[in-house]
Length: 131
Image 1 (cartoon, one colour):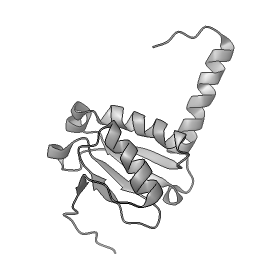
Image 2 (cartoon, one colour):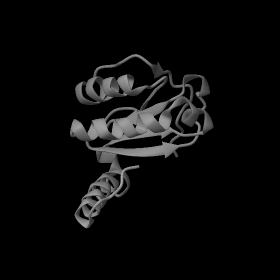
Image 3 (cartoon, one colour):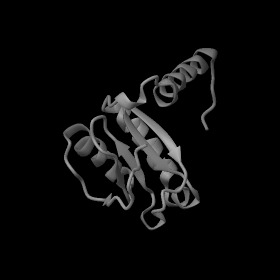
Image 4 (cartoon, helix red, strand yellow):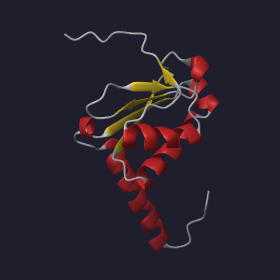
């Protein structure tokens, strides 16, 4: 952890964190944003999900992709951790397995931005029941 050397530096850090929290947690209409759910159960954390999520947040910001990132529990794909679910507005959600930083970049640039499928998709093994 770096040392804060001045009040101005502290205020700049606070503003940067607040801006990222506003997009991440305070979106009034998350359905209009790309939603990324990162499995953060014990198996996901052990496989590096926390680092992947942090990397994706920075990369999405660099690419100016409006995203909401959420931590979830186990998705049931322990064999494929780290796993993430990506929901792009107007498209069905897709779960990706074995996501590392390189694959995360590919998911954001190819799948999210260009609507191209990339390797690592975990097939859907459930049905959604609408009431």
